Amino acid sequence: MLSSVHRRRFLASAALTAASASRVLGANDRVRLALIGCGGRGTSVARHMVKVPNVEYTVLCDCYDQQSAKANQTLSGGKGAEVQDFRRALERSDFDAVHLATPDHGHVIPAIRSLEAGKHLYCEKPLGHNILEGRAIVEASKKHPKQVFLTGTQHRSAPHLAEVERMVREGVLRDVRFVKVWNYANLGHGLPQTPDEPPPAGLDWDLYLGPAPLVPFNRKRFLSSYRGFYDYAGGWITDFGVHRFDTVHQIMGQDRPTTVSATGGRFLTEGMSDQPDILQVSYEYPGFVLSYETINNNAFGSFARTTPGAQMHGARGQFDRPNGMAFYGSNGLVVADRLGYEVFPEQQARSGSLGSGEDAGPALEQRHVQGEEPSALHAAHFIRCLRESERPRSDALTGHRSSLIAHLGNVSYKAGRKIWWDAEKEICLEDRQANRYLGRVARAPWDLVSLPETS
Image (cartoon, rainbow, N blue to C red; front, side, top):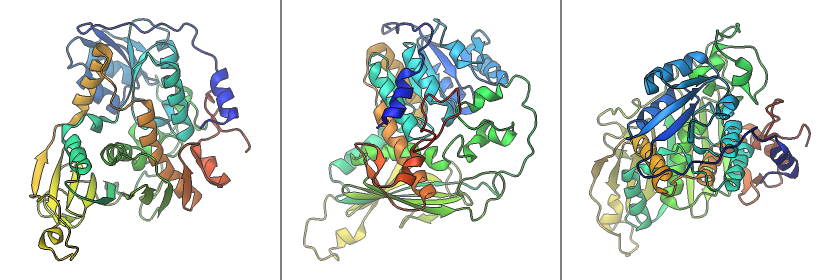
């Protein structure tokens, strides 16, 4: 929970000059969107949004003019308004909802201000740069219940993952007590040392940095490579990891771990990044253990392309996904990702060699199920939430709890030890040092959500 200091900062912050009431949308009304953060991910999801009939982007906002101009041409045929500062964008009245796709460290203030301005919100994950920021967004969403809030954890809209949820919940796999999540990539030797330089024309570098420390412009701290710095993001675990943690929560029906223990380090990569290239995290939940891995020197394939016959996770087949989840049941194994899943029967359970004499559960057949890319489905779901009052599948609290799991892995890694987590208070039990990593001292005047200078 936010401490009294954090809460005073949060509640005392100046509201927008003119907050507008959200427009009530009918089933066939045109939906007008503002894209804040016009980089690769934002534009990718926006392409899905505009494929829904009567949806348009009227405002394209980015601290780098080049990005907003490119997105304007791609999404709006050059007809949208290009705005550099999100605060100026939120003063406008020509859109109904914000699609927020800034880097992680740029989520919290635009998210809160969008809700205060009466705008519905599609917010990319992780919900904030840290746990305190995520909680602040949840509290803001509670204060504005008429605004739709959807977290961009698109696995929630994947029918094939709902099938896996059904299998686990109905006992088809029988006892599932171990789940594994992994993010594998081959990043070579990381981010090479690159000299600082003046920012490019059209970039407001101070606006880009926001709450992060003031440093000279460096191209490695910008655009997609920002993910390699703790100042702006938490690495693979808060990027692809959040999607898979969210799916584990959905399937297992638990979203509150009790302990977290991380280990790892920089064993291969060199250069500017301050994050580990190998990270392993063990989470204890009531009733099961979740194991997470990041490896940055082997992709085991690449982004859903498969290598026939590769063996991973105790089974053989075309499922060597560089990002995925495995649910180990006493009757079988399911390996899943955003594009499909495989089922592998547990042979000992069928043979009777375990000697328990108990029913082994329903017979399973090895099979592969191809799914549909869920980003388009999630975008369409957001529009239905606006037009038809469909209940958001991943609201602010759901998105926060899935983001929080990733952040806790980094908290344990930075603290260098196992932590015990109080899910109600959202603090590490009897661990003052670890609690310092739940947030950060944000840079003024961007310190809407900040740790106190001393604690």
